[in-house]
Length: 536
Image 1 (cartoon, rainbow, N blue to C red):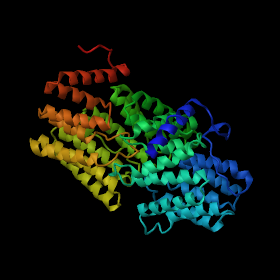
Image 2: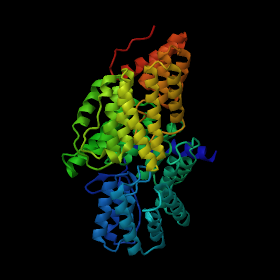
Image 3: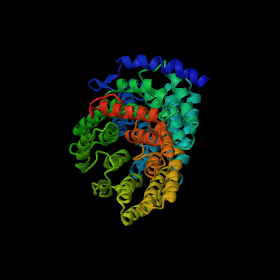
Image 4: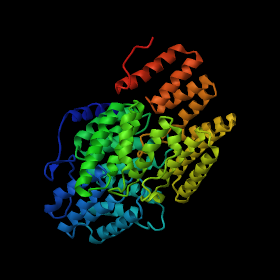
């Protein structure tokens, strides 16, 4: 009840008002990144730059944050907090764990921060907290160190209760803790984070981290509606951050709000491209690619295949990334896979390859797996069982690689893909009962976990595939139940709703069939794909 009181009083009063306002912290020639006030005992001359660095940190603009923190260190060589910032810029709690280069930079920065120290107990506490994460990194696994950091930030926040930044960073660690437990459907840690953020919101309504982390706290089907006000506010708080422009779409996708998703990611992609033109011309922006994946997903739900095709042209032209970032790799693999599978272009899916081959795909086994899943699906649906089995074998190799890296979440996601592909192989061989059992196992495993923020949704939802199979086997009542369960977690998906319409029609449920066909018509009409005509 306490949690709900916070939600109603703050989310639906403060955030909507903020969404109508235009309050921004202006620095660096009018840059708009929100307002952060993080006092430090370093030279007064670096305070404004330090605040800007923390603002970029809260919007996950990690490369820019690190660069700015290093500028602070250059301006004040005795500023230990500058190196705290460098260490934080290489951690990114709710993304993938730091790669080898990031981990090495973070370890060195944390050691430098400890060596330089600080003039206040509060700053020393921050430095000790980040050092807790990097300490013994060569022998202690990532999740153990992440939990240690969470505990350390909880102590900092408790010790300095008037420090809003400590509370906000503590909330971020709780979100990370919740995401590390993807089978916990109570969302205990995420709700704890939201309560902390709510407590800070009235004093810091223009703070970029609060709106951003509220979105992540509620980025789940059962909670997403609670974050709509924060989603609409965040892009206005920090409109010069590509990530801030993109993040609202995490909520819009959860709710099937396709036009809002499209507008959010068109703006984010443009910001990402513009930034790379200044800093790394010729490279592809990972921010833009991440936005393109969400764009492609939304366009596919409205039948806007021509726009997906244009995105594919850009993706196929990529030769290098501005940063070796997991989201960029995932998007490069997911966009062509979604395009082929959602449109049931099985030959196109079967012919996909890892492109460009110059990228370091071996670092991101879960991104590589997306391509092999699409290939296996395409081959199986075309009846080429031999080819499909080869690609399924590669999926198992990638799953084992992820297990060896102690990455159980992505290992499970690859297992979902493997089970689904095996199911369609069984169907191709007319082992229909086995096919249903395999796809049901894939669907149950997918239902037991949550999607990762890197993706707008599964390349093909497993329960939707199960429904497709049941419909193909002329079991329409079972298919309808499966479609409706899939729609509950992934609303307004074109394939799911059109499948439900066909299943209802074949089941003899004329009322439901009419309702679902009207929804299909509404999705396509919204994009101008078909003229609107009332159902008779």
